[in-house]
Image (cartoon, rainbow, N blue to C red):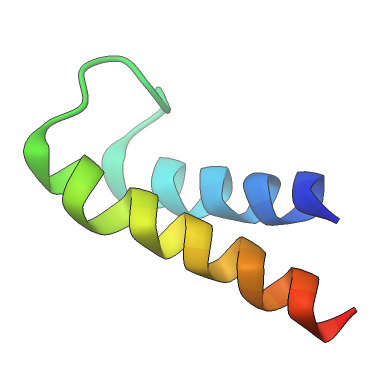
Length: 48
């Protein structure tokens, strides 16, 4: 369950930010992408 959500999150991040997932995260990464990833993973967990 969570592995697919994390994979999707990583693919979206790599497509928008570059090839490294956690190389030098800025404030924008923490404030936007991290909550989005958590929300997506919770949404997938609730559907199952």
